[in-house]
Image 1 (cartoon, rainbow, N blue to C red):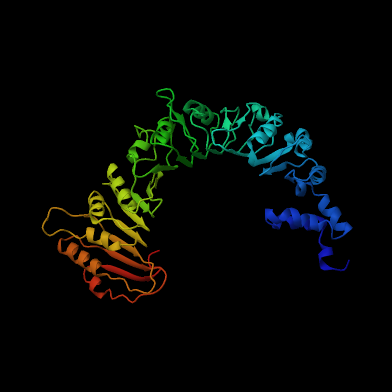
Image 2: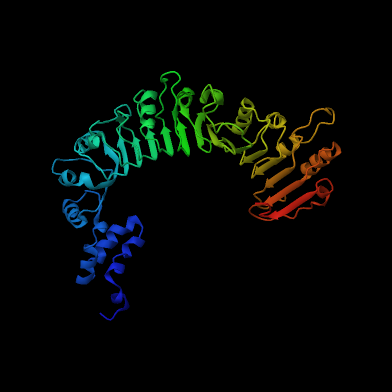
Length: 462
């Protein structure tokens, strides 16, 4: 009894499990109840410590349910197979539905999913987070969630995630919903009209993710639904119409981020956007483009004072950087002030030249660990045979971020480009050469003759 820890007040001692991660909390809390009788009384008398259920062991489930008393319940059914009528899950559901706060159902077989959901018809006034996904094989055999799920009333729900199930959206009173994810629904299972009804019933939605769950048939002409609180919407679907059909009916507010996944090579990017961009309030006044590319998933990211739009391009071709640069020609880039190329693979000089030629207001070009930055630098060098053509005439700053190992980079192209632009009266103001890993000893004295401000070193300008 003289140990210092025994001097802690019981209410402080009971807080110990709050500092463990969720994977250790259950086992360690049980261990604490076996230290001594006093500790057992302290931890058993705190109901919130026993409010997480997995319903695997019947006796454990019964004990946890008794100790949790009136606390909100976190119920997890992950990978649960072979549901039987005597399963402990069905012993607590009639008494626990009204206390459910979190419900996770994942990896459950199709037949078991139908049994589980059929027992969840009572109201759940405390339910805040509902996540349901089914193990379905083949994929065309998706279980249907009944309209009687929680009596159809999910007014307390804040987060909803449905995957590999069919559902008769919308449910009633989704007024508190802020996050919605719908993934892998069978084709035609959810219409645009139903989604719009659902969005109208959830006026405070902040995050929407539709992953291979977007409808392909349009809704009533002229119908628009405002997503006034939206911060981010992610659309990933089959075919060019999967995103455009839905976006034609949504008012995306200023400041929101729109993410669209499309396939390359394939239809033009504009085919994935609505015919009229007037309702995409954030798809205007963009001043910057980022092209974080690699061999598999290049991306076009537009940003500006009104928000951000990311167009992710699926490609398994080695010329994905070329395809990405060519896609920029579908948009008006004459007002773009910033361009960043991130981890690009080998592009052709012609595609780089044509892309930069259209950016007449470009002020800053950043090449972040590109394989061949020389291609971009050479494209900026004015052609002496065409005095009327100047690539990026307002360019003021070039940032080159290197991933150095053993070789010292060759900045000859930098010097030639800067000297040629200076001779044409278009003098660069700043060039930043930033070291990544490793070090190199660069002689930038010649470059300083043509550029007002040359900075070189690890972390410069970042």
